[in-house]
Image 1 (tube, helix red, strand yellow):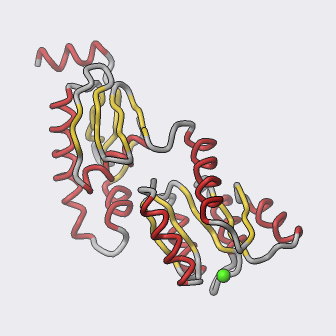
Image 2: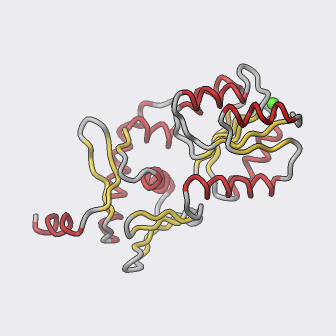
Length: 236
Ligand code: CA
């Protein structure tokens, strides 16, 4: 699970990042409203934790613009404002949940888990597609029929997790690269192919019915092979 935290209080952002990282979330921090807006608009995150008062652009404004542009990433809003009008403004803009500072970190974790369950409909630590299940806690990949298990290295895990969060959907190399390496380097585009080939080898080893197909001119798509497809592949 990749979390974008838009928060201008450095100490709070650092503390939260440490705790979230312990819980195996991946955290990206934006410390002003403009950067937060740009990152949130990519739709490359699973959850956004959004502060209300931010330099550059207000949290509610960012949420409003995300929703207007069709970005559906669930947002948990955090703010020092406790009055009802501000809470309503945040929720009206499209925030999914709201917490007032100061708060207990454990409560934040519970709210996050609830948001994940509501939006992704499965236990946050286990992702399942076809007969393939990915354990987010220990980066292991399992064929649920044969129980064969294999572990994934860091980038392989992140890329496969992204695919398994978006089964049947074509993901561009740019989206993958952005998600795994961030904006800055175009150099990494080629690496996507390298990692996809590593992942394919592991899928093959597990003899799973899940595969990563190339989508010409676009990128890649994670698919569950129909039983017939599999026979056809075996004959080829
Ligand atoms: Ca603030």
